[in-house]
Length: 156
Length: 156
DNA sequence: TATTGTTATACTCTATAACTATA
DNA sequence: TATAGTTATAGAGTATAACAATA
Picture 1 (spheres, rainbow over the protein chains, first blue to last red):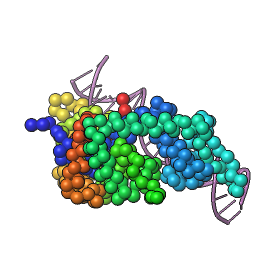
Picture 2: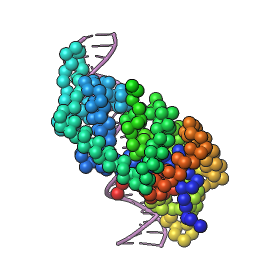
Picture 3: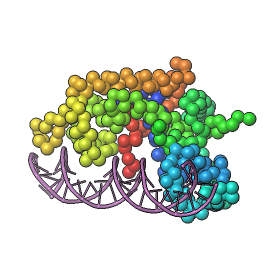
Picture 4: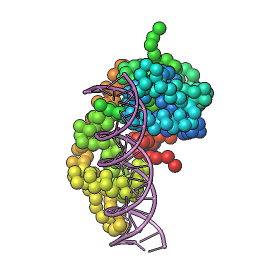
């Protein structure tokens, strides 16, 4: 008899296990670019909505404004993000990606594609599409924001 | 044009999103039983391998031995787990579930089944089996231990 | 007075390593 | 001496709230 198998696990628990593993492997890959997953999420959001304020960014990512400060400090000191005072309201900073930041994000997308291909290793093309289709339906049902890792949000 | 969709996300990122969400929802459910997911993992492991020592438990779950102490302290004070000195080596404690602990775990399984059913809400029976099949193949490929949440292990 | 960004403080959580009792 | 369990301590990380500049 087989020692133990995944036979009894339902989809929800398998999803938890695989999701955690996928997140860990992605974290290892972007670590090669000197980035953490939260930093990737922040860079991505700034790329999508250029000119975002730090408060807006905190809201989008579910981070505390005080934490956004230290993150942006780090990314700015590395030349990936720029802070420019808003002309309309001089209290706020408008955040944008620098050229260097955009170039780095292009590398992140490459890394993400490799990660995705490797992670789905044992499945053929048709099976991957089948899987992606089922997962998309679940994601829409659970109102998951495309592209945003829910781990950045906290409950409440 | 649609505002944004999951169309471009590959399976690996969808897995990360859905896995995180599933873990959050499961945590909320077992909170009604006054348990956290790590506590559930510990109770489950003691149930599977009755008589386990705290060191062995730390190894299985990837937890620090010092942390196991406080967890077992809590579970023992709630009458869910019993510590009995080993006759062969009086340094070690043999951990077992009490009747109350086993009864609570039965409730956990019920809660887990409800969680699974609700989480897969939009999928019909055939689609759930299809999804579970694909996920099991990925789980086996990635050497995930059946029943053990990988989040309890740390890297290294 | 309210809000943006920032800083400081207090709090929790974790890991490391000392300690005891058995072997 | 080595190991199981425990306890204590130091470090990291997080949240809360006080602060300065602008509205």
